[in-house]
Amino acid sequence: MLANLAIPVIVCVFAVLLFRWSYGKKYGSVFLTPPGPPGRLFIGNLFDIPTQNAWIRYREMSRIYKSPLIFLKVFGANIIIVDSLEVARDLFDKRSSIYNDRLDLTWSTLLSPYGHRLKEMRRLLHQEFGVETVKEYQTIQIVACREMLRQLALCPEGFMEHIRTSIGQILLRSTYGISGEEGDHLIRSNEQCVRAFSASSGKGANLVNAFPIPGTLPDCAAAHAFENINETAEHGYQVKVIRDTLGSVYGAGIDTGKTLTFYRFLGPLDRHAQTVSTLYTFILSMVLHPDFQKKAQQDIDRMIGQERLPNFSDRSSLPYVDAILNECLRLHPVFRLNIPHRLMQDDVYDGSFLPKGSIIIANNWSILHDESLYPQPFDFNPDRFIKDGRLDAEAIDPDIAAFGFGRRKCPGRYLAKDSLWLSIASILACFNISNAVDDDGTLIIPEQIYEEGIMR
Image (tube, rainbow, N blue to C red; front, side, top):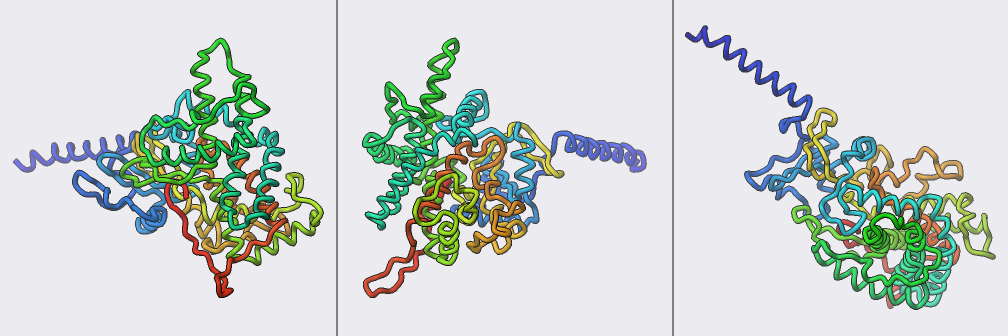
């Protein structure tokens, strides 16, 4: 009897194994998902989601499980952490067509789901803030930067406010053509609006509604966009795309950093001003590392003297300023975890099954602190980007992770980096940045404490 059953049992087992192998090879399989901590019944990995310093904890998981991909599951939702530059490029760049989606938060370009509307918003941003078109806004950047220098000289202790105002002026003037007293009023009033917006979790917030669109626009992104509206298409829809797109430019550049409950089990995620935060990091780094400050100032004095201020035409002759900017972006990235992507279809990567609908998050901080890419990664050292007095072409540019990946990479990065470079070069040319002192004359050493969230 047992002998008669042996052959059918063997055949059945073989058939099951063959089916599992072929199904997993073609479609993936739950048994082939990337490694990760074991979950609990019903709640999965809820208690494995870090509430603080998530980027550090995810890096630890990657090393514990010896995998660049970490898989977590919370109440049925799949979360995949990417902890490697190579894997991030493979997924977000090479397979961008299926990794472009976002969670269903459609009120900004940054978080809009993938689709026709997002493509139109991205096209507009690339058209108005691409690597070549941003040169049209250099005069705006210079005027705002010079005013910031004047304010720094008059009231150095208010440097944080002066920086925020300068970046706000650049964004408002280049985007909407708004400047002067009206621009200053909008910067103040919209910071209040953004605080209220960022503290809420509603989907209907629309920053651009707070901006009045002047009847006659000077040369700016809004003027260009409205000139190019196709009258034969749906006019109202195009206007809304323009409003939403340009409204997100201001929000991404000057936001305040209050908590936004973005996705409940991912913890409180908030947005902070990327350009502003990087300038704060620059100020802090120069206080803590005066030798690098002196080195940059010597380059500026040698190349352009002390009779004029740096201009964009000086950039190629002042590589050390770019090196300092790169190191600020690398050591203290504003986005420590990348804005979550959503996988649009089942995928298989290096033998691991990645299910459709998974939330894919790149660990930007871990990538930018990878010892194989940046030796002694926790040291502030602009020299890592310099070779023979020039920017080292072989050094890994922190742009690889600092501004996102793939087609969702920040389209405003060219304007941001131009503004950052000009501000850093100009401040270094005009001022020495040093420690404050207490009443006894003792130097005050500032602590490196950041307000953390989706942007720090």
